Image 1 (cartoon, rainbow, N blue to C red):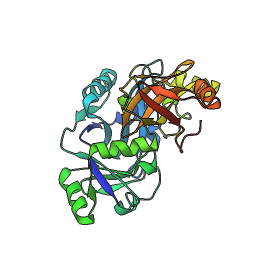
Image 2: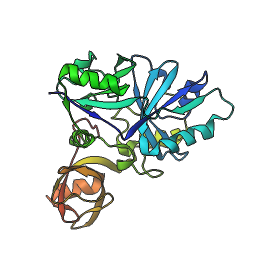
Image 3: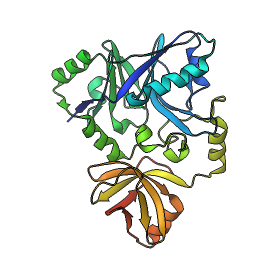
Image 4: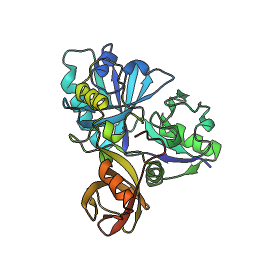
Length: 297
């Protein structure tokens, strides 16, 4: 069964102009040269210290580059991009509700669109594009298209209609972080947020803002904590609630829903707690950290 949800919390920004790609190359964590009409990418923007600001999916809709990001923070994103464009030939425009972002998941969520099951695989879809999620194919596929095109697909293929909350449960089951709900703006680092495993950072490209500290963490192996999936037994903990055991704090809760969530966990303390078969608590709930199947740490 394929399910489809309209992601009204996402919005597109279009960048056009002859300098747009070279401009983005100096701004994002991934390699813009890997972006093509047949491949989309996942990337982030960082502070000069390498701390998280924004993450997004990037799509080549020549002559434009489309950026699929959090709707609630789209103004912040466009303002930051505009801050650095100076005299470059770049035009930045929010797309509002001209295009809809939809997520499809389930056993045939990729094949029903005629896509290969490859990270970021992309093809035209009506007046928009269909893509395999560039973070993780098991997340499913994504449609960026006029709402009428998405509705026509749902009707023609008998796809089950779902909600953003349903999709949120799906990505939590996989242990995939969701933007600023799970990463803390101006505080989180990419590698502790699993960006390398989620295809969001390139270590063989030129310089970009925040590159130096990200590369240093990679080569020194200094990541002491990670975002991990947690199962929750009890009332859902609020965002930021400490996770504790009998020797103190081990991490903090991030997003959660339906008995599962994401948490930032200290890896050494987690290993110690597992060795002692200790119970971890987030408020009155018991939480059990689980390393996502796709993670390599």
